[in-house]
Image (cartoon, rainbow, N blue to C red; front, side, top):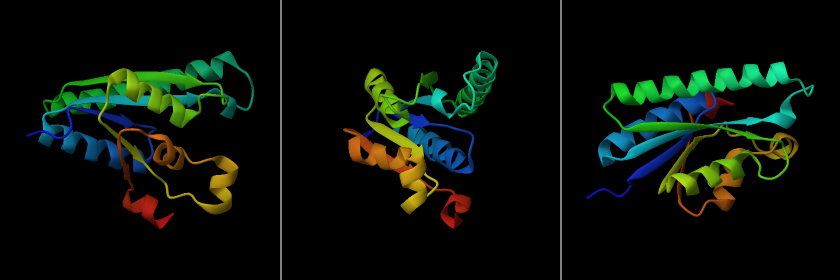
Length: 150
């Protein structure tokens, strides 16, 4: 009996994200679940409101998502993806991920975590922390070996 039928995984190209993606694909394979990759661009992180920079970020995000979907397809998994943009106001990056989880009807959200805490988390915010506080579906936070040392 499958516990999870629809797995959403947030990807950002980091080692923690790669670990989350690998875990998500293993769970999706084991549970015979659909997998949905999401990448969120935070427009407010751009140093200048520059359309060319946003186009470059979108192209990089699409490439990242295409690679994730291709990797899932190579393992025989049914995979889809979505590129989202937030303006730094509401919804936040985590809010966008959770909205997409609702649209996808996910029963598991997987996200890498860098283990940022304390002052750094207060200054930069923590997507993983916000997901943990606000998710209404099961949540798995994955750390890579590099992320655990950070």
